[in-house]
Length: 325
Image 1 (tube, rainbow, N blue to C red):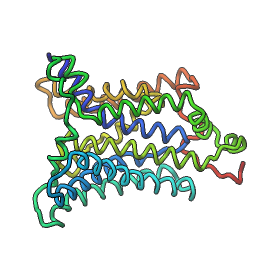
Image 2 (cartoon, helix red, strand yellow):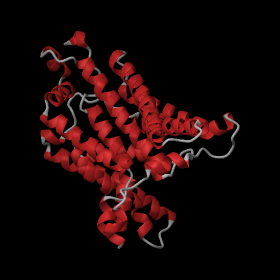
Image 3 (cartoon, rainbow, N blue to C red):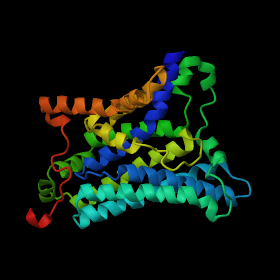
Image 4 (cartoon, helix red, strand yellow):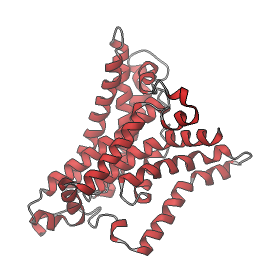
């Protein structure tokens, strides 16, 4: 059925956004506004495919276990190190968060395009970078999905990263709302001076939240490369998904569980033009603006209602100077 196909493709399109928005929500809850998320997602994808390429090239018989683990670890290292760099610049050196984030995005995009586009030439292979063997393991679906018709297509016809994205979002929502760690993190994001006076290590929470958030966002890039594109690299192929993930944070009202539904809605809006025949290029561009337009509408509505729980952390984007406490 057409409905099940649309839902299926919306979920597939929305998963990179879910990873990115969940990672950014975790980061922003600490008061850090990381506009480097698009670059971190790019690096997560590029380091993941680099790890897979090197393993496939030198392994006599690639093992399914290592085909899964090596790209995962590579993506964690790449995105984690970039998030750590952002943390050091903004938390320790008190650099401007907006400028630092944009610099991280520029660097991450350049890093991915350089290594993704050049690695095969460096090793004398030629051609585009592709790791189909590894990607096939990432795309493996549950064996009974095809036997359940439309129900199986909607709920079970995905690789494991789709379910991992949902699980991480649910866990993040529970931790932020129900645990002492989440309470401390929210306190740091709202008023770091008060949190510091209460004995909470503000620097530790900012570092951990930003690095964990960066790693989660990096999984979005890995999913896009391994699952969505089937293990092939194309410079610039990630498009504006990183910025859409940041927009989704606002749409989800800084709640990871809302981000699950929001990501699927954004995924549907992202592909809506393909189900409308006879569109001009200008009309397609307007359709591609829909997620941003919806985000602006949500931002206006929540601002007018002015409810505390629907607002960003009070110290978002502001550096904390302990000596001024």
